[in-house]
Image 1 (cartoon, rainbow, N blue to C red):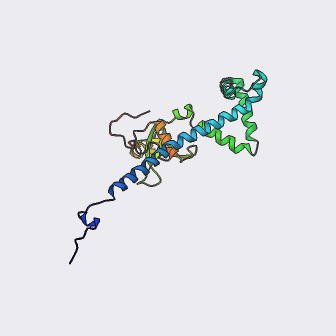
Image 2: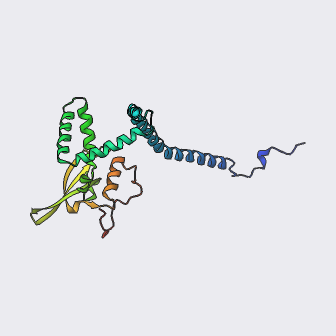
Image 3: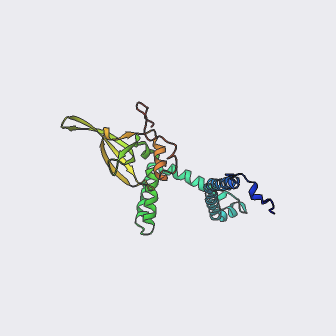
Length: 231
């Protein structure tokens, strides 16, 4: 005499997936956690560095606030820092002030330990000052280092040279390196060899510095024919 099989697994129909929902829920939890972590990381770093700088300035200014007000005033160091930066800007716009600052630059450039730090920081700030970025006319793609590879470059000038079949329009291109855009290559191409992009100069700079992490998936590298170039 046989007894009917009452095992629970026998009631499941063939092809039924019993683990699909838990796997889907686990994937959702993991992806949400990773997304939240990636979103929070730059915010935490910014807050941490901001708090560190705020506390550092306050510690330097604590003796001054104690003498001036008889107690420690929170934020007094930040206020002094803002005033000093403003005064430095006023001095730098003056002829006498520029000479004084030039003397200070020469002094720092002669100190062995501080020389590479100061010169490196100065070149970074100068590279992305308003005067320097205005010399970049537009963002283009150039064939570099091979004919089938394209690199992001900034057109800095245009000129005409005589050729065997008539005048040839050439463009000067600065191709910065990643992630240090203060160095790069000066290249000259025929106008027909470069390809315009839909990037503005600011977008191109951010793209180069980040190595394509910022805006790389949302921009159009190839500008449609007839589209107006973005300054």
